[in-house]
Figure 1 (cartoon, helix red, strand yellow):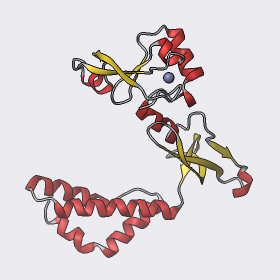
Figure 2 (cartoon, protein in one colour):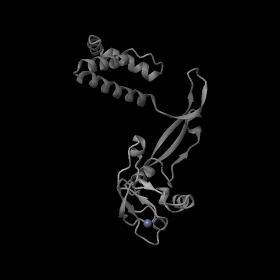
Figure 3 (cartoon, rainbow, N blue to C red):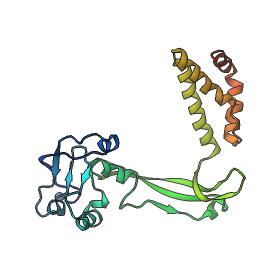
Figure 4 (tube, rainbow, N blue to C red):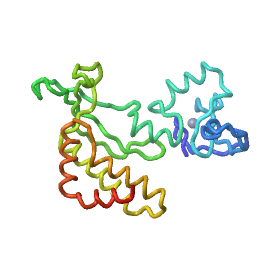
Length: 227
Ligand SMILES: [Zn+2]
């Protein structure tokens, strides 16, 4: 685990009752944990007394608010403050990295808003190992009454949505077939059947309903017999 300011390996300097997120959530007494600190005396993380636990969670409770802000905004590389979160900060939040470029909607005759989104793969220390990009399309959301909404949602092609929903179908089918206990069998059968009686009006859902009713009529009958 490396210091997110100077990248020197953190060292254990003692034991303290550092509360982890899961301890906080479950309201359990924080256990004693090894405290990791930066040994580099020229480093701001050392100077301010920043500490981490074994999991890379970052604690700034010994610092003044001003120091903590300074560390976060001016010294943590890419504003990444912890070991595990550094990876997430790179891969999910793209902190300090280029995120996306919006392209002109004219490319799709104004129907969708295309965007190039950059993707990153990183190690635990937040070093970028691989860069990539993909094209995504966004669309104004529509309310149930057909009016245009205010938000943009990621648009998936019909084929993609159909494919996702079929994968979902096979997952539920497997769950139904593999469940053995009487109660579980009944629940999973009902869950499986619901897909055949789906009332959703979206095109990919209607197509899926037609498709499974056509090809899996036998499985449907079999599931019905368990209710
Ligand atoms: Zn350091």
